[in-house]
Image 1 (cartoon, helix red, strand yellow):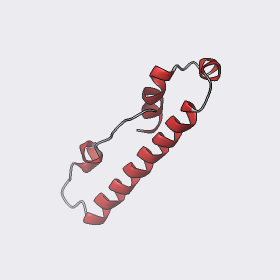
Image 2 (tube, rainbow, N blue to C red):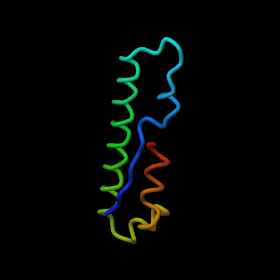
Image 3 (cartoon, helix red, strand yellow):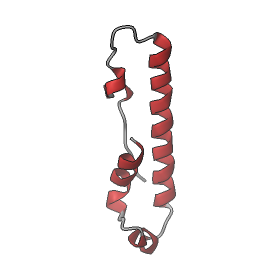
Image 4 (cartoon, rainbow, N blue to C red):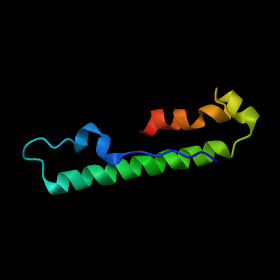
Length: 73
């Protein structure tokens, strides 16, 4: 089981330039949540593969989270 966390408010989009509306910040929040959810689904999918299948993709169990985070976060 892979566990990871993301801090939505640490992204550069969370730095509020002048005039950035509340709705734009809310949109950024939901976008980051969607990316984190997609990343978690990818990790779950990859975790279900056998070691041989992972090796064919150039992955190991230890690199699953890093691989998914690079792709989605």
